[in-house]
Picture 1: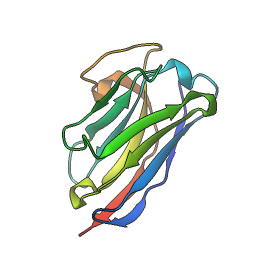
Picture 2: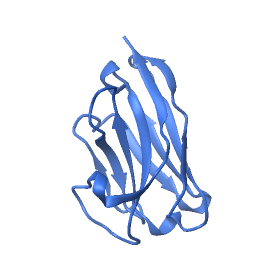
Picture 3: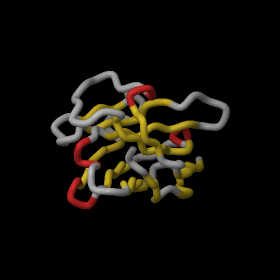
Picture 4: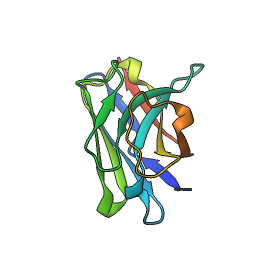
Length: 127
């Protein structure tokens, strides 16, 4: 499977911005659709954003739509999540994930679609 490492989390005031990165080991990340999930303390891990393997389609949870932008650079085996206009409700551990299968395009991405996960990076948004 793809090995993933997140970075870029931190503490930011409401209204601020952060840019998360997800670096993949190996050289096959370009074959997989990717996603960001997040998990707040005591809550279920939830979908935030996804991007297909060829970056032709992007998907966002309603809670982040218009504020977050997902992108990827397959040449560098890296995926990004640009987070703007951050809110305290965005506070969570953010996880990078790679689709279990290669070259798949779909909608309604779920946790079960992803076979590779990073260890997460903490994002804390203060009021």
